[in-house]
Amino acid sequence: MTANTPLSGNLRKMQTSLENIAQYTLMLDGTPVDMNAKIGETIKLSFDGTINCIACDRLTNKSFAQGFCYPCFRNAPEASECIIRPELCLAHEGEARDMAWAEKNCLVEQIVYLARSSAIKVGITRATQMPTRWIDQGATDAIVFARVPNRYTAGLVEVAMKAHLTDRTNWQRMLKNEVIDADIVATKASLTSSIDADLQQYVDTDDTVCSIEYPVDRYPEKVKSVGFDKQPEIEGRLAGIKGQYLIFDDNRVLNIRKHNGYRVTMS
Image (cartoon, rainbow, N blue to C red):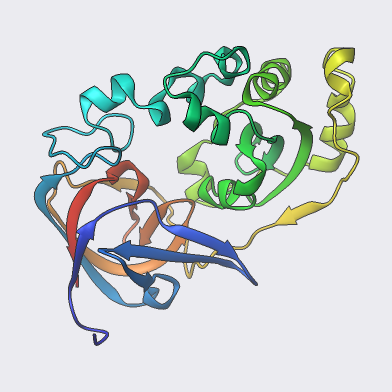
């Protein structure tokens, strides 16, 4: 395969790792594409109209919740309500859409974290997903707030924290690199006492901060989101990558994760 050979495949969110800066790999039909190496080049992504569910692989006319067909959106464990609202998780009581899946994903150590971007936000991820989760959200830095034994308990901590912090990232400000000037270590210390005493036992004593830089030549001044539902062919000079967004040099941005399951050709 040469550098100019077109590659086709169903999109999945870019795989990430953290070295000196965030590293991004896009998998297309099993072939890894180093997206950091594409920055500064002109790329074209062409959607052929095919969408496959990321859970069952069946064809679907419409994608739900970033990649599911409607039946899987209703029934797949990966699309359970507790993914969005972890405080509703019942796996610790033996109730889940798929207990085998829940044992691997809900009944394992969870991290409640603080991440700094457009604001300081609170979030939850499995311990094995650090720093991937923080890179996916475009965080400038992040810190572990608490380590808890299951998703339900993580949800309780997060609910308590949401009285003081947001649980969402302003994606437009994140992409413009508008980062709040705040100290997440000090924020962690000030919020520890805000949760119930029975939850304070889970607060992590390690205040190590994970700092993340992104491969971006130029951030957009104004953000224009583009997508394959309205524009099946997207072409431009790649100016950078942050979160799960490709940033083009004319202020357009493409959310790769939003298009999970879409079959595209990249050239």
